[in-house]
Image (cartoon, rainbow, N blue to C red; front, side, top):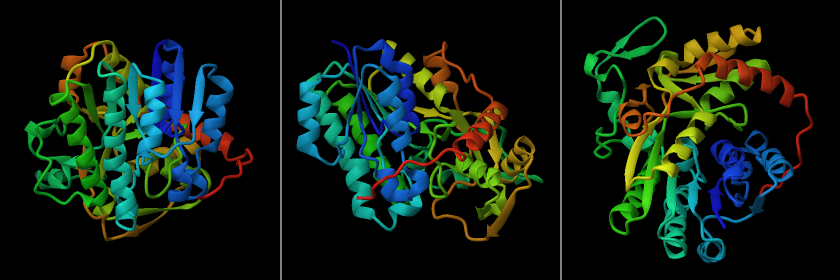
Length: 359
């Protein structure tokens, strides 16, 4: 029996992986205890997404399990030895991490170790994909020379024109507490490849997004911005004149790469995975684009203090991933992403929200 295990299965990437890849396996197991609801409140709740999977994916089985539960995780994985594990569960906010450092590290670093060791014991031939983050680079990208334009910051040196590659240093910089816990997880995933021979990869994501994201102010930049504009709510810009730049990748394109890696796995690999130059946008540009797409006038305020460890300009260099997996490509444009999320937001905000419990 072929088995797929996905942690964070109610979230953006986890749920997309289940929908996209579950038909290729006999059994798809989702692990998610909806911690987003306790982290972020109503808009972080993933109950609706879980119910969708349970209703529409016939071979899906959901487990309300915390990745910090080592014994529970070991037991579940042992009984269901996986062929592919996609680890998408995390405490995802670098702002929130500073207020809950123990929880942040226990979930991001400890939970990752629990899953790695559970997987190795159950099936050492398993393919293990870890959703890491570009925050492992800390604020080192801010040391690159930048040029200010009317609406964004751009890399001044042509050598950086395609963005940040995997050779960029990950230490000797300010990461935020979240970034530090994700570094620990990232390096441990690599080590299980180097030391134990587990076929692992770390996907250091830029801004992963899509209509199924439960974006909030502390996590999910573009989705949260779109909701704010569509609902006529005030959006807050934090520092850098609103000209900070992010590259955005649709969750479908993330899943497409995971499929490629599963088919031809490598050992202890690291990839920067984002939308690249073509799907990059600043906050100011995003407000304008969403205003056009929605027909609404964005309302926003500005705080001159940037978030600790935040990037001024971050674009994922996709050269390595394209060389290793030439069949993979970005299929969804930034313009389509925005239009899709605007349309989805209009529909979803008219529907009643499920009740949820904050543990």
